Length: 409
Image 1 (tube, rainbow, N blue to C red):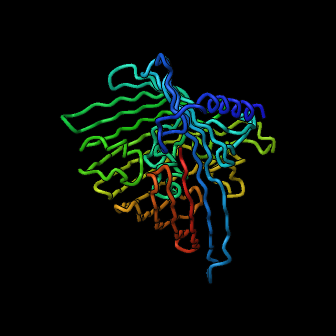
Image 2 (image 1 turned 90 degrees about the horizontal axis):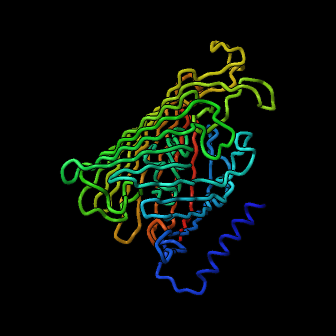
Image 3 (image 1 turned 90 degrees about the vertical axis):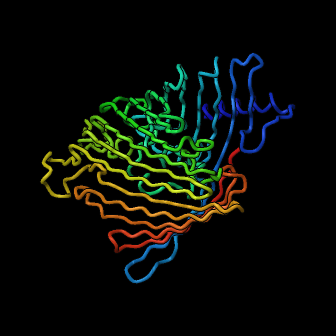
């Protein structure tokens, strides 16, 4: 309640200051853009939300059953960014308000809603060098570092939901340089806590180390297009990004490194006992290509763990009933492509396959998705729909239809 009151008070103050002024901003550029007269700071405020309908049909071996329907606000967020003291010192704050954004409370964040998505400072301390500090996305797979507001489909793929690195608290060092006139190379390294966002009671396991190398042989994309799905800028010349990411989470205590259940080594329902620790390694190989309305994105992910199983007896050869926790190990491939017509309608297709390691006792998954989009004002105002066919081990089938819109100031 105190947080909500403070948030409303801040927003009311900002709106009252600007309510009598005519702004030169436009839709999609932020609700408020303000720079101090002495240029000592700036702030841009941009709220956004996504609404979604989903219908799902499961196949029971003979026929598809009755559909399950769901309508929800998938995301509702408040974003603030700008600079402070100097244009070389930038900041970003993003708050989540939807139930999906807030869920995940536990004893390691004092059982509180997880409002904060991003709270990070970015210092451009030398030419082509930046130092980041705070909570934000790790330099992981390309699909994850693309904003949820700039996706080609209504939501990210199964590869991302099972293997992504997501957000963490720590520091990042970023650098870029050119080989010749056009070949752009970016290097990004991160040192973080390793247990995900909004953790207040840590560090329970070890630290997390991430490195990402980005190769752009034909130069930079227009408007950072390698961090935005669909070719909205209709690249006049081919643009390609090839990336490799390596992540090592030392003594990880959660089933998927940054997220998933904490691996308690006790049957005590209070979950206050010691935690199972295991080194987890995740690698990604990604590609992004755009040219004249056509876009392609490919991702490969693989996660391994030194000690993926914890059992009550401590003996990994015991029965399934004794297994308490299993690290989600395996590999996945995601391929998607789309074409944007000059009318700003887009058709896109996606194929995703996941093969878990046998130790997880999970069956392989394949998913085929066909999507249709209408961009009214780029990614800031769009209507999206897609239909997916998912098979589990080639037997259990599901069809899911989704329809939604994005609205971003």
